[in-house]
Amino acid sequence: MHFSHYKRNKLAPVFAIATLLALSTAIAAPASGQTSASPNAAGQAAPGASQAGASPAAKPGDQSPDQNESTETVKVNVEVVQLFFNVKDKHGALIPNLAKDNFDIFEDGKPQTIKYFKAESDLPLTLGILIDSSGSQMRVLDMEKEVGASFLENILRPKDEAFVISFDIDINLLQDFTNSVSRLRHALNEAKINTGGVSCSGGPIGPQGPIPCSSTGPRGTALYDAVYLASHDELSHEVGRKAMVLLTDGQDEGSRLKIKDAIEAAQKADTICYVLLIADRGFYGLGSFGYSGDSEMKKLTQETGGRVIEVGNKPDKLRKAFDDIAAELRSQYNIGYTPTNTVRDGSFRKVEIKSKQGDYKIQSRSGYYAITRQED
Image (cartoon, rainbow, N blue to C red; front, side, top):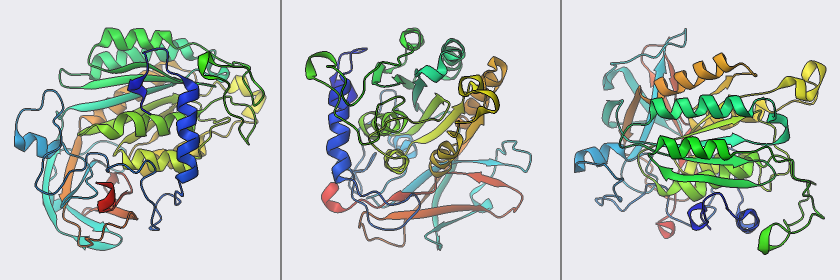
């Protein structure tokens, strides 16, 4: 099942959950960063993958074979593995204009030969905005809508695309891929707080029937499921630079899948995840007891090459966070190598990019899955 199969603003949550339940029975996801074998959860080709020597389907606006080659991201079953990454100094400032000779790259600890290297700033970008519309966001949702729309207006260029998903007890595709800022702004404004009252014994949702019972109890904020579906149903079918921005307090309540499943899906979709941690601490009471969403969000972002940015409930901090993300997405390097390990067994391969100047910090995804030939 894919989000795009559903009418915009009317995504059937039961169908989405049924997909998750079916997939979760087949997922034996390793802990992120491990090298144990793990088949693609959906049994599909790796995101952006193609046979060696073949070109993937071009995104609208692609111009030439050379440009198409440079926009393909981490390939897991072709000759070249590619990654986008940022370089920062010890103060967190972005470092531009570095050359290939400034870097070494390793796969599972073994040195690799860099096949090509390029500083990229204007490649087409596919962006997902995931907005938390659960009860804990009641006092900050309007701020998220306003500042998020301004971010999209500033970052999107003619060849870029974005989509908007809201998540609470349900997961709703408010706007599928588009370059229209007005449509995306309208979609953000459609997000509404939903505390629902749907639980294991809840009533029907639309004509499809009730949400299946969860072993974890009532659904509240299906954050991990939303990341999984955005990765698997939307971003895995795209090529080029891909990123996901989550506006949330990081608390998950009632997802069918686990954080490791969300991370694996994002990695297989070659998607960088950023989390703007918008935590209305007052919702959780004095001292924020009961709030613990930041630790799992750090796992998600560190494994995918993004980061968590603390926002709280301050509009100025949210604007700066979006500005920082925009700068990082427009200041990426692209590195490619041919793996010395040619076995495609579905295992996770840890990739590390090292700067020859020790005071530089590399912000990159932790690795990729070497999908088997049968999943091409």
